[in-house]
Length: 490
Image (spheres, rainbow, N blue to C red):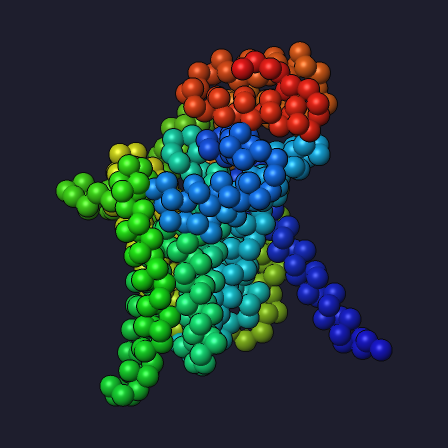
């Protein structure tokens, strides 16, 4: 028979999850509801053109795509499955915007859960103790208040690319966590799992090669903090080699095998030169909170409206965060744990930024502060984690300072939310053609209506490869599943 205490614990846990998920959904609403653009708009349809309806063919095409300038075989195969699955949902009547929003919501939620768990392990490694819900709520709240939409002027992992942006960060954080587990207690199976996780992260997306530096700095700082002589230091550091050696060799081999094709694709073509330091500096600043406000304000034409709905959303997030942060148990943050956490996350963000700053594509496109690419997913996560942990540390050590800083931080975070909402709303009204052609594909529109929606989308003047992928993919998929052309325009 289940005791009353156990029932209360389950109910309390369920209530916390409901409040947390509600906080994330409301706080990220402008981000979850952006119009689908860029590669993700045509992704499922382009994949159908290349692979057809068969799942295995989609996985095979994904795998083959990894050798064209990449070595992210795991990520491409998963991408093949995701595009196949998304198209099946669309065919069954689920709007692509709904699928996309739910995907991003699950991604951001999992990101916070994984990041909080890693932070807790790092703090424990440094002699600290923090309740997991304090970490989840704090990191989630800071991410909501600092993350920036860039979709109208940049390749934005916040609004787009959910499977290559923040999902890559999740995979990377899991690899770091496995290494921390090894530092907490070494066994051969733990070392093997950590090595496999590191390799998986690198094969998911090349940006995660930054983890080799992160793990090295993590091991070094941990060794210095627990210095007991060279013999103990060697025993502490040797797992680093055991974990990193095989993944490093495999990554180097794959890079060598694909180097010729990598040079042909600017996204992976390495270009260390005189432009690299300047690009790296701009990208580092672009990771910082509020660094893109000037571009966002320019896009919304200096008008950031406040409505009752927006005020209610900000109030709901604040209320739910307050409730989640109450009665969470003892909080203790030692300086060693704080340093270990900051070094780990900041190095991960900085090196991932450097990896992409050294490519021709990013050097050509990220020409001003606020222009971002997938590195922003790592950088913004790292900054959110560091700010959250510092806030907790300051609140415990210098309560007066925390009280003085809180109104400023709340005001800045609220303005960031309002700016994101203004960008989303203006962009939502700016590209109705994208929304309509996707709805026409999903819902039961007659052929004339579908062709009209497609014609208006084509009038926007897309590159040939781009509109061919969408039009051909829609026609072939619609014919296969519904027995008639979507429009038959091409």
